[in-house]
Figure 1 (cartoon, rainbow, N blue to C red):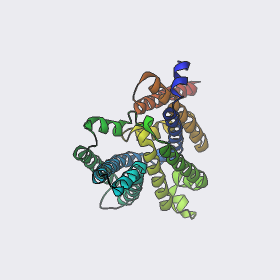
Figure 2 (cartoon, one colour):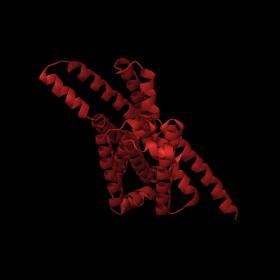
Figure 3 (spheres, rainbow, N blue to C red):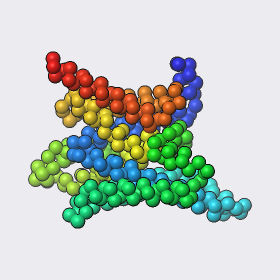
Figure 4 (tube, rainbow, N blue to C red):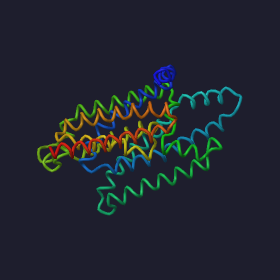
Amino acid sequence: MLERLSYYFSFPLVRYALIVGLLVALCSSLLGVTLVLKRFSFIGDGLSHVAFGAMSVATVVDVTVKRVASGDNAFARWLTDIIEKTNSMVIVLPVTLLAAILLLRTGQNTKIKGDAALAMISVGSLAAGYMLINMFSASANVSGDVCSTLFGSTSILTLTLSEVWLSVGLAAVVIAIFLIFYKQIFAVTFDESFAQATGVKANGYNLLIAVITSLIVVLAMNLVGSLLISALIIFPALSAMRLFKSFRGVILCSAVVSVICAGSGLIASILFSTPVGSTIVTADMAVFLLFTILSKLLRRN
C-alpha cells in the first residue's frame, strides 16, 4: 500500500488534489462552527445549488465561445488561447457571491421569508443549470458531467496549476478574514442583539459570513461536488461540539477533524477507486459517530 501511495503521489495531479483538499477542509471547518451556531447552515446548501447553476453557465460560455473561435485565423487562435487560460471560477465566483448577498437580503424581507427565498434560489438554480447542461453539453456523456458536478467524482484529480494557485489564494483570503474579524464573528455568533448594542455592525458581519461561505462553496465544488458541500461544512463542527464546549476549542477540534477526514478520504478514494466527495463525507460521518459515542461514555464516567 505504501508503494502504491508513493507511486500515485509521484503525479503532480494527486499532489495538487491533496493540497486543495486540505485547504478546503480547513476553510470549511473554520466557518462551519459559526454557521451551525447561528443556524445559517441553509446558506451553504443554497449557495451550493447556485454554484451548480453558475458552473453550468460557465460550461455554456465555454462551448459557445469555442464554436465561435473554431477557425484558422489569428483571432480564432487568440480567442481559443484565452478560453484555455480562463478558469470557470471567473464566472462561478461572482455569481455565487451575488447570490449570497441576495439570499441574505431577500431572507430578511417580510414578503419573502428565509426558507421561501432559499427554495426559490436553490431549486431554480438547479433546474436552470441542468437544463443548460443538457442543451449545451460539451460531451455526449451528459449524466456523467452532471454527476461529476453534483457529487465531485474525480474532478479534484483534474486540477491545473493555475486552479491550485487560485484555490490557495482564496483559502488565504478566507483564513485571513476569519482571523482578523474573529472577535466580531464571535460576538455576532453568540449574541447578535448585544453585539449591535455595543456598536458591532451585525448586519455587515452577517453579510461577511455569507460572502466567506460563498468562497468556501466555490472552493469545495471540485472536492465534494455541489450537493455534498454542506456536509463538509457541518459534520466537523457537529463532531467537535460533542466533546468541546468553548468556541475556540470547538473551532480547533473541527479544523483538525476536517483536515484529517479530507486527507484520509482523499487517499482512500485514490487507493480504492471510490468517489472522492462521498468518501470524504463518509469519513466525516464516521468521526461524528465516534465522537458521539465518546461523549456519552465521558458523561457516564
